[in-house]
Length: 167
Image 1 (cartoon, rainbow, N blue to C red):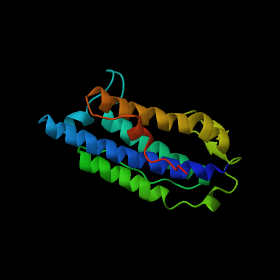
Image 2: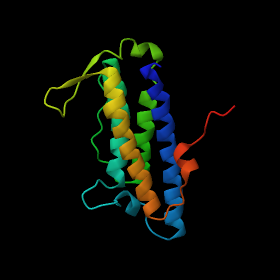
Image 3: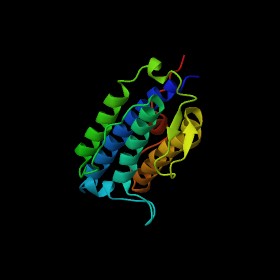
């Protein structure tokens, strides 16, 4: 399997997040509170709030793909304050991911990827994706999902998984 296969999966899950946010906004409207309250909600005092979880989810996707292909990812200033601004961040990440093609990943499995947060350490691309970035992406994604559920948003497993390629 090519490491490119991570791209459509990142895109799918980020699109799912858009639907989760739709449900979160509808829930807030039904309960007569500002949806921005959800963006500052967290599961534990020492964890990121929903906004930062979703910013991190976007970052994991774009940084992973960029580093695997030897490209520079776009930077976001993390200044989003509203659901609409967060949606724009997610859409921008999806648009960036959609620029990649399978041929961009030639040699990515063995390409050594620098790890900025690990004192100059490096990993081969396949290990970087499998051991670090996919788990980190899903950690932030699942935590965001759990924050919404914890706050009463009606999400289920089908919302998490999204559309399946069934035959």
